[in-house]
Image 1 (tube, helix red, strand yellow):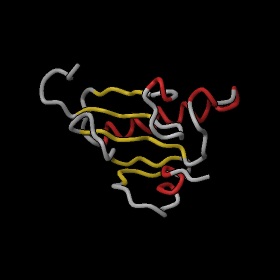
Image 2 (cartoon, rainbow, N blue to C red):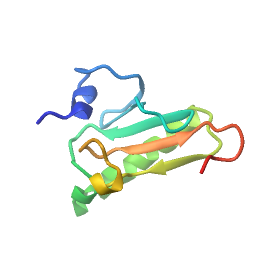
Image 3 (tube, rainbow, N blue to C red):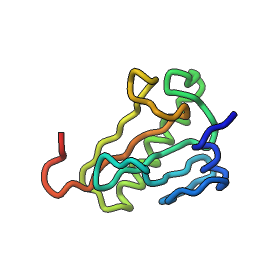
Image 4 (cartoon, rainbow, N blue to C red):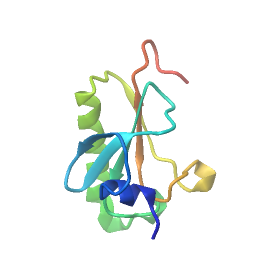
Length: 110
């Protein structure tokens, strides 16, 4: 398997890492869509949200809780959480990841 997010999670590829837990890694997007654009990535490789098993509900919750903690640590009062699923849904890397976007000065950009 040749997955850039797995490589980043193992510290084999460079990334601007913001936070880590034993099961998650959070780093800055290289193609930001907002003043703050972070990716919350489980270390375990799962290709897409569509590939999550019924038994992965705890992992899905941990992704969201990690995003919530990082948003608080970044001082974000408001933010967006986005999962892109599959190529037609805008997913560019075949590894589950949650986009955390924020940092706008006024109302969030649409």
